[in-house]
Image (cartoon, rainbow, N blue to C red; front, side):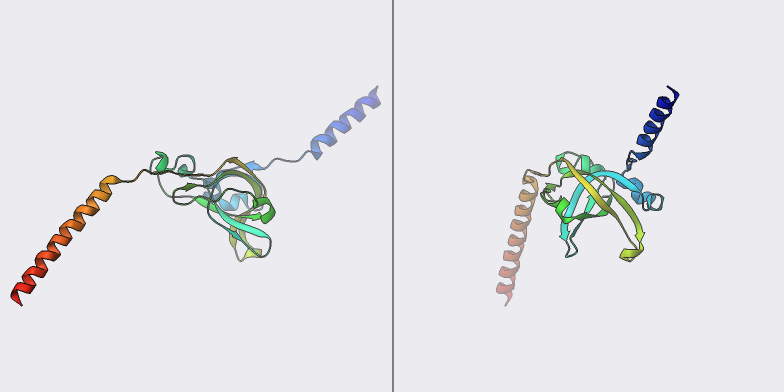
Length: 180
């Protein structure tokens, strides 16, 4: 009976020790504010892919992961202007990046993803660059096009300014021709 108890305890202890440690969940803001704290640590970050996908010859794709308030509520969707964009560079194996929606840019919201990888703070192998070396990526919200209504008042103001400038030009040319 005692032997069974010791064996059971040993098996349970080895399973507990063998189970993988989950990555630390952090925000983009935390990585930007205190990057050295997470140097060479596996982290999980949620954010919007923006900019471009830079596919490199070495089999990796580089892009930007934003984690600011605009990720959750773009201004064109009624979100408020509340500070600067905050993002980090990420490096993803090109095979992992296949099938991702286009990255966000003006009038486009990029896919919201959860990425896990090793945070490389001032990586000496990459001339001191800081980035997340992604090992897993999961899309949680697909990218989409934003539909902004036309600003009719701006169009009207533009037309009015064109009419005023045309009238002033016509007046100028008539006076110039009458004198000369």
